[in-house]
Length: 365
Image (tube, rainbow, N blue to C red; front, top):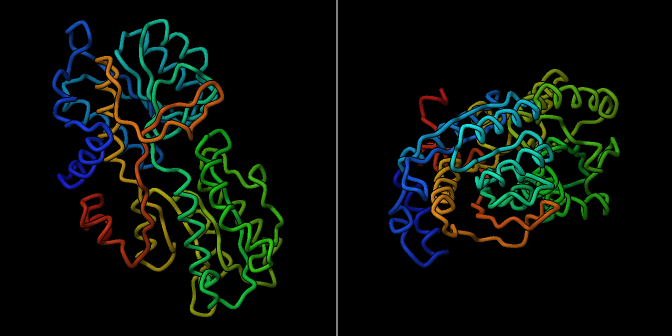
């Protein structure tokens, strides 16, 4: 992790706690009994570079505190992930960090964690329906959706009145079993809905309810298939101007479908396509004037925040928190620390992603 990222988060955390992070880490590396402590890390999938990075970042940050770790990937299988978490509990880990495949799948296994006095931190995706989630570390998910929708309305000229509409748009949402999906989509629709109501934006498919536009497992080929269907059924005689896509992997699939339908030429330019996570294929796509935007979430900072959170709970301390009311998981409002996402397009791509060390310049060739 770059020193810039560490300094940024350290400053934010010490502002929240009004004390130095160094003091928080003074007794790191051991549990309350003084023995070497271990942390179980459950990540959803290896199919996204983002989650590979998250897992390694968590291992590295916790190693810096002196913890041993067990890192498992669930291959997007909720039952597999629950079994992995149960095995970690049985092995006697001192804390769990879980980025869930299905946020509703953990009730029974987290009861077991509670009985074993193992604190659970929900990582980026909120675990639902369980009172046994101590804390939540993520980004401002509402702002993610707002940034994506703002990019569309500003890019079409709807905000300043320079755009000559009406414009056509189609809407995509993420996985129906990921709690973040609702936050992203509802925030986006708060921005887009007034323009849809006024007729400045037209959703020709008529599919505007979240349950109509979700994408299981955030899967790119699934998004591609739906985009192809929409183009065939709704846009044979009219071009599409924008696509709300909540995630880069889906955006790549959507753009593939658009290209198959003749988009991406001077005569038929690609519509505005949003995204999230600043994955290398999408950053390359942005630099090539294909995908228009992504929302950058510095997962190095998220891993650092989560590592401090783990170190606090292992030692019976309260971690840094900045949101105590937003994330109700159905059983409790889970105290959270939220980081700020950043909208990235071609104009600030190098400055935000390369200059910060998040992406290597050589990876974009």
